[in-house]
Image (cartoon, helix red, strand yellow):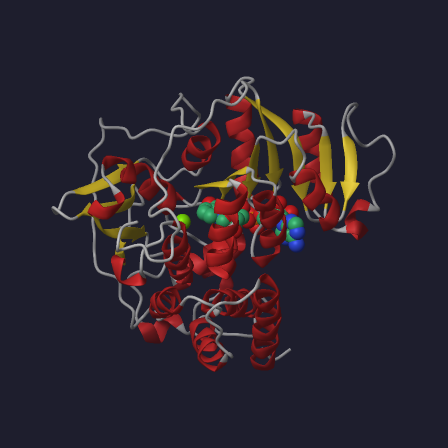
Length: 406
Ligand code: NAD
Ligand code: MG
């Protein structure tokens, strides 16, 4: 085990030839109506039979879910919100598709023998439980739900090594690192450098950030994503969460993780090896590529993602991040270094603060301030259980509620 990876059972997870799986991998898609979910459906449709939709799940967006069901004809449709499911009339489902309702049913179905790959794309802390069910069942998971690792990284990595579950990252930065790591050995890695677009306010002053409106913050310059992660990109909390995600996924100490701002979002992250060589993965900002990579791994086959066009001039800029204007970054480094319950608390505080901002009861700059206070005041635990993580998640939400005037 390399000295650089004290908490990771096998050193850095590096691409391995997978055991051959049957052609027509059966996919369980959790969060199918969201931004990642819709991109995944395009990847499945482009795979011409190599991927089969077995299960599509969403929370309450029943109409788009039913449309997807009629297009893809999965074996199961899961609606986790029972109230929303109550509105689904008899005859609304296509022939051959059954309806299951509630998060418990989703946990059961994700673990079914028929499932070859799980796409974990539910947004926020709500994604942890079904991803955990997939880990318990030893599944191969295309992980978009970064919160799973942010909240419970050490528990997830340990349990996955016990059950044989494999986690292939979908977050574009982590997918890039996963691919670049194939160029060297674990002990040869000097550091991982995550790229950040810098979001819509990359050049704004700290003073002007206090006046930012939700509509402005929801305009991302390079990526089209769900609303929560779009706000996180604007505060750079997304990069903070990704530092924590990388810390557990790649088993490196926080001191070996860095962030560089790269406004074009073409270099998706970099691995710097001990000899100074830097290996990067480049492609246009299009989430279909990391989803496609994770679903077909270890094969590389043609897919639907956009390609770089060299007939046009291409500029790649890099600049250091500014933690004074984007204090969330400091919190990410701190939580990645502390480990334990820090990630779960930061994540929960941020989810509630983002909700408060979108509802108009917190200013944009309050988001990081509130998170910093809650993180500093929380009863830190070094080796939490899943139950501890859940308890502190709830505690952090209550703390933020005290700040959010309704
Ligand atoms: P989104 O808001 O567009 O979609 C969320 C999906 O989760 C929907 O299908 C919704 O029905 C489902 N959902 C919401 N609450 C739920 C609950 N309580 N139980 C069950 N299902 C629930 O989100 P998104 O942008 O697609 O992001 C999904 C995940 O992927 C997040 O963890 C995000 O951080 C991560 N991610 C997204 C992108 C991106 O480009 N959008 C990139 C990297 C990582
Ligand atoms: Mg990302």
